[in-house]
Image (cartoon, rainbow, N blue to C red; front, side, top):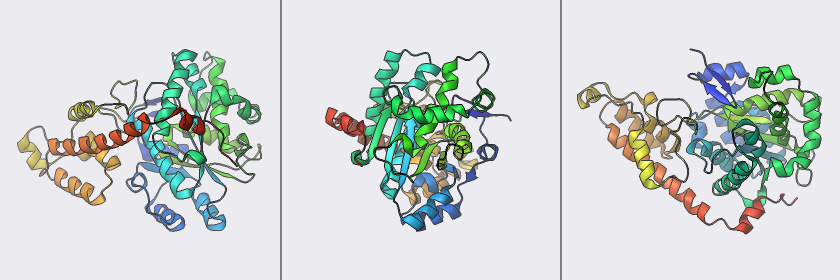
Length: 376
Ligand code: TRP
């Protein structure tokens, strides 16, 4: 079965092991998770332990850095392309993980809003993307990043600071590379060709000269489809005299229906502004791996890989023991689909409620604090 993953499109059924092989990334193994726990001195996040973050580039270099220098001079970089008024549960994952990393690494964090990207790649006006940018920034703030150590910027307004690095990168990127990496063709407009450098350069600490120091190491948590940018960039680091960024890649969150990736375009995404009733309805209608009849279910049990509610519990249910119990019971056919879905509904409702409460209380002052460069 063939599949294709670019930042702009995911086709076919993704074979993740093959994908990380093709990308030339390293799998996140139990050994490296254990080393992370030892070096950083914390229990690994569920997203790591449960395999949602599946691969990396140079995580060992990050761990060596911490062993040698402590947590100094590390910064995190991630981003969001605002293409809808509310983010969905799939978008939430890299941000929730980044928040945890910020806490355990005491790190500064820069968040790029690629409003330019969405204007160029989607059928949206500049006014629309700017409105979406503002709403998405509020979603991101509600994840709970440390306002003193987080800087959110949008490309349309911050471009002058990125531009010197963008120029250096653009001088070393040719059309062939961009076509083969991103799937662009000869009749694509030139905006598409000039954009990738803009997403790459926040990985150079010199894009933030007022608050990042000379030897800062960049760590990028992202969904694996964003690797294309940074794979290209890492090859240019030595000619640009920059340090290679470390990457941590996540899988996609499965969709509610059939499909590997929750996406707005397939129309079955769970948006972070969903009400309790909407969550309930969505999960009740989601694809089940349970037996078709009660009898068959009791006999053969559930196919957990196909079961959306179970897959979401695997991601979002914190309690390891409870998850293990659900896994055993459901697989054996003793637990029923309805019960698993009900638990999934509760878990999601509590995450969404906490998120929505935080979002409601974002003042202009707080918003502006995140949009102002970090104090050195
Ligand atoms: N292109 C990403 C999106 O469409 C946004 C983004 C910008 C990003 N910079 C990033 C994502 C760095 C991960 C890491 O959502």
